[in-house]
Each structure stands twice: as C-alpha cells, then as structure tokens.
Length: 359
Image (cartoon, rainbow, N blue to C red):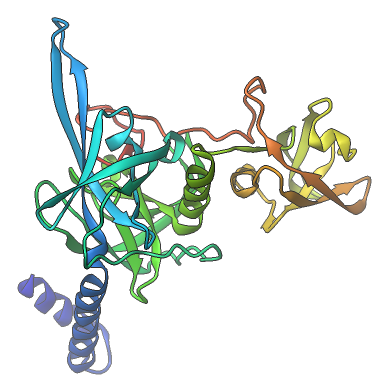
C-alpha cells in the first residue's frame, strides 16, 4: 500500500505545478484519523447475527444449517436491522456481541428490500445504536463512506469505500426504491452491515451484492426507516396503493412524460377523478421525470396518508389530493408495485443479476 501511495504522489507531482506532498500527507492523515473515529464511535452497535435453519438433503434427511450476517442496533430498546435472507424462515436467531450470545426475537421481514427487524431479548451493558434520519439526502457519487461489518468469523471491522451510483434497477431487475451502489465486493457475513459517511451519519444497510462489478447495494436510511416502522407497528411492510397504471411517451414539444394509462375502478385515484392521459408532474416530495420516480413516491407513501399529486391535463396544471390505501392482494401487478431483488444463492455462478448480500 505504501508503494502505491508513493507512486500516486509521484504522478501528482508530475501533473501539478507545485509539489503536493505536504498537503497530500495531511489530507491522508485526516481521513485515516476520521475512519478511526467513526469506527470507535459506532463499533459497539455492530455485531454478528446468526440463525439456525432446518433443511432436508436429497435423501430427505433432516439437516441443520447455520446462516450468519451482520446486524446493528437501531434503538435504545435493542431493535436490530439485519438481512432478511439470514433470519427468514429460521427456527432460532441470536446475536454474537463481543463473544457473548444474546437471544433475538424476529419482529418481521421485508423480502423485496432484504431487510429484517429483530429485537434482542436481553441487552449488552455498553452497546450503542444508530439513528436513521427520515429526511436524510442520498450521498453524492464519489463520496467516501465507511462500512462496519463482520466478515466470516471476524469481529466488527471497518472498510473504506466510495459511492459509485444511485440506481433503481440492475440488469433488468427493478429495486423497490433507489439503492446506493458502493465500490465494495460483499464478502460472506457482511450482509446487513451499516454504512456511514465521513460526517458520522448513518447512510443505510448493505442488502445486496453485484459481484460482476465488484459492488454492493445499500438500502438508504430513509427507506430502512420506512420499512422498520411498518415491521415494528404492523409486523409486515404495507405497500401503498392509489390504483393507477402508467406509461412513458416522448414528444418534441413536451419531451418525456409519465402519464396515466389506466385508472382502477373505485380506487383512490378514481375517486378524486384522476383520468387516463393525465401527465404526472409531482407526487408528494418527488418530481416525476421517470418511472423510477413513481416507484420511489409509492414506496414512501403510507396507507392512510393523503398524497398531494400534481398533474398536467389539457394544457392546465392541476393539484389533486389522494388518500393512499393498502395495496389489495388481488390487484394486478403494476409499476406501483415493488419488484423484489432476485433471491439468488450467493454460491451460485449465475451472473448479470444482483444478489442478496452473502450471509
């Protein structure tokens, strides 16, 4: 690593009109100290999550399997965020906190985001916890972030990486909402790790892996908070619904437009007289420029909430307020619905699809 830094400093010296060694050394030292501080401040909130599963082999004999990942406390009461792929359908789950096992109750799972909520039955005496912010903005591409994870059987460990993208799909697979892509290969046991920016703010949870490009996907803090609240108070994630189907069209005069292709009879959108052909301009806090914007708006729309929608109809800008309801089970799949990340065996060789973070 030292040789690499020397080579980088030499290149900068040749490209710049003045020597950069003092400034570069100072900045490198500051980043190093900041990573150390972030790890010291947050490592007591990170631990290994384990779950026992009963499976059957090819002969039909009962087998016991153990899955593990990373988890973090997100409340003073001992609530835990982890990967759903680790604890879902398990017989028993617990956490390994500094070599001591603590039982953990599964509160609920949300498979489309690969997020699970647990609660520790008893608590360590010296733990810390993360606080997701409801209005936290997504980080800029190129921002440095720190991942604290428990790879394999190691204790919580920090790694420095970079935000490489903010995406709602990968390889024709749609995410439930916008994910943060980081330039970090996800190793076994790292799924569920918290991601923190250099200001010490909690950015989200590592939930999926894209091994073909050496990257991981992070569910942002705001989205994790949305899922956590539903799992905590309802035991399941409640998908918001207003009863619309949408399409995309482009004209030279108007550019790209997201418009309504169908209104479900007697749906919330039908009740407020939304019509086919209406162009979506804004839904809640989200300006609508793409189908992904609609998906994000509906992900954060809670059942019972009144959603302010701005539409363009016959050359006139109009405002309507729709009461969001829970999506009916019999409702046909639409672009409002969340499309889960493919649940692929981390050990398989299939490519071109995002995988759950390896457990």
